Image (cartoon, rainbow, N blue to C red):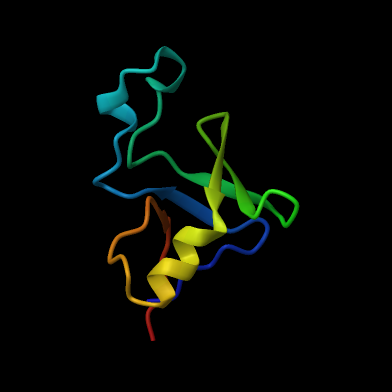
Length: 85
């Protein structure tokens, strides 16, 4: 499976996310089923801007780099409609 983080790609939170557990009032409408969009890649922040449920999140590029090196096995973001080879 490939992770598509190009502008406009549809994404969602991974099932093991902590958005619900954090109990932040502004994020109560967001779950692992909520589809969002990659807004942009911001090199000045070394992050991807992700919008899910009307809220913007930053996904640090270090997450992607660590996964590519095999240092982590789960990312906080997954594609909403993944492409498999």
